[in-house]
Image 1 (cartoon, rainbow, N blue to C red):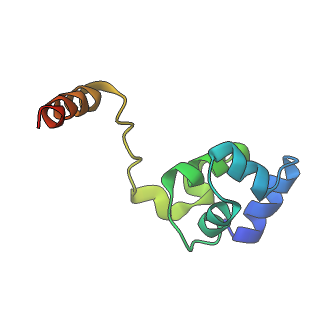
Image 2 (cartoon, rainbow, N blue to C red):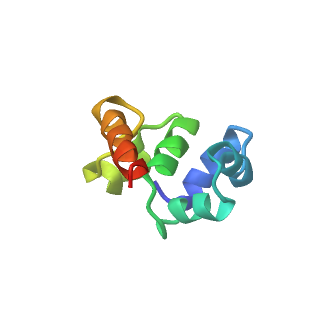
Length: 91
């Protein structure tokens, strides 16, 4: 989807880039950069797609081969992080 169409779709939801950015706790520049393909952020791209009720890969086809980042608070990663913190605390 072209950047102008993405911006129009966001506006059609009664939103603007500043509101989207505040909701994501990022700068409006970051949101604009993702829309204009000057910056990559799976999280921002996925949020934009959800906001405009479109599939991610329809809005940002370049993300089709990108895996989302895994949340370190989930599962095994959280346990390993805690173990590493204990080791570091003993130094």
